[in-house]
View 1 (cartoon, rainbow, N blue to C red):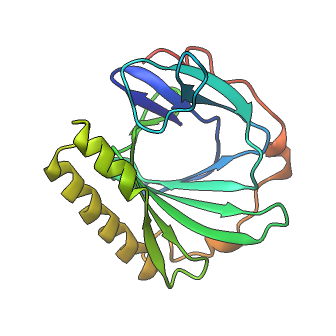
View 2 (cartoon, rainbow, N blue to C red):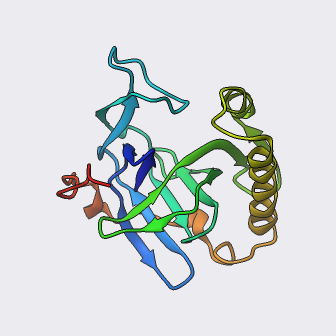
View 3 (cartoon, rainbow, N blue to C red):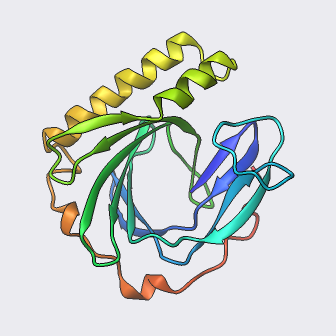
Amino acid sequence: MREVWRNKVYSIFPVRVAQDSSSWTALCLPRQAIALYPHTQEGVALRLPQDEWVLDGEPWEGGDVLYLVHIGVGYTFTGSWDDNHIFRGWKIDLVEPLRRTALGFDYMDQLLDVIVSADRSTWRWKDEDEVSEAQARGIFTAEQVRDLYQRGERAIQLIQSNEPPFDGDWENWRSNPAWQLTFDLPKGWEQV
């Protein structure tokens, strides 16, 4: 999965396909996979996109991560588990709609997230301050911010009403132990 900002790779996460259907694709971020994140030239991690950045990698240290993605939809669902395989909950990432590419999936995070409890009964917005700052910097317009919140509300309805892909039992999903072996990024990953 690559984030692309202004025709340049902004981050990249090596994922494995856990399930692929005509409507949803499930992707696993294996432990110890080397993900590349945006930083300033001085090594400061970036949260808001800016004109210049470099990519730096480090192994993913968290527990299992599962992304449920749908091409052309402006959100992804991210499930996470701790090291003991206890489900932590869902995060809804509001994104530019994912696009399938020869290398995987391209998108761009749009900062606003929704944190959903493990039982899906409660939720809260996350990173509203970053969205406000992005709007003040001209990254988002007021109309785009309204759209973010509307997409978030649609995604919340989907997850709480058990609509696909939430008509299954994803909370009890387990990654394939063989996926924990690290693998290289695909050749040409830096070309958009």
